[in-house]
Length: 484
Image 1: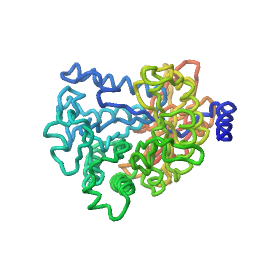
Image 2: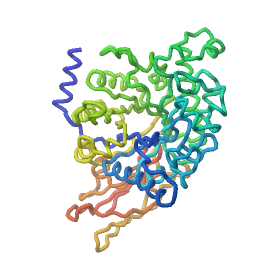
Image 3: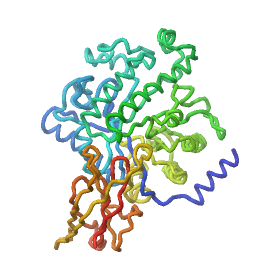
């Protein structure tokens, strides 16, 4: 343990801040349940619809300013949803009434606005919990507890989908199928894909007797969750293989040889086996909820990274603890965790949750803008799915008008897969050729179309040279075409 603490000390004090990587997930959970992050206004007429939309636009603008590239948009809350669904009702958070449309499709709007800003939008799906008995009663006949009673279980004044029932995985896949078929999401992200905490009394004895097949109760439950993960992953990949599939497991997998989990871990407490999922290759990313400090964070982050099977591990950071009402964290706690993640070459960071970035709690947003996220970052590639770069664009032309605006146009990449048509990354520099290995030269990413307009933020920042690359949805980037 002393050696481990010394190792951490060396990283923090001799290497306090790594250079910013060109490829890094910078994600935020945007919470819609109870309107925690959004929306704050009920959409009941044209004015309030516009205001509700403007609230989301303001959040995304601030995230873009800080060079975030991934929004985990809460799409399914507790048996209700944020989109036009044939399966579950609209959440009342949008209008004040269960099942009532807010006059537009929030998920479609969120995807469109994220893509305008070059950010990915992942549909964040709360999987197993269905809410309190009061909440379920509020959904009336539209609740899954009424429509599909056989897959629902009451437990401690709440309702849950039953992971031990074989039809549960198909119900969750039905919701997933609806989302990925109707919407251009970049990922599906599953939260609470687990049993309730320490659920020794969870009423699934009938299903265990029927389906246990000689396994211990713990192993059967763990296998049930893994079976859901496997089923969803495989079908998503058959439908849209570039759509990322991820989960947010409990932040400690099991005890490590460096440090004990102190009785709180994914494997034993909620029957998750996320390291097993990565080993089997049925996850593209995991966002372990590492809302801890010190030895409850660092040894477990190392454990995730060492067992990642080359999948993306993106620790979730508990930025809500910067609020004195929530905890006693200091901004330095988050700074050190970001530096550690980068030193260990992990895939990125997730921030829970958007409100604390919008409120600039302890100056976090300013710190990211000014020091940690000063440049754009591209999405890390997924070579286990595809490792062939698209063909580069051709025929780049640049013109400058008297107002200092540069207008770029180019001929598209010749790749023919329209569903996975390449997007483009734009680079600008004051020297030729533009070094496209340097993230500081990225001025835009995920550009759709073959034209782009640019002006320097400040008149004295003259950047007359440009380069354009094609990038596919697996993160493969082509060679650049340079302006002359």
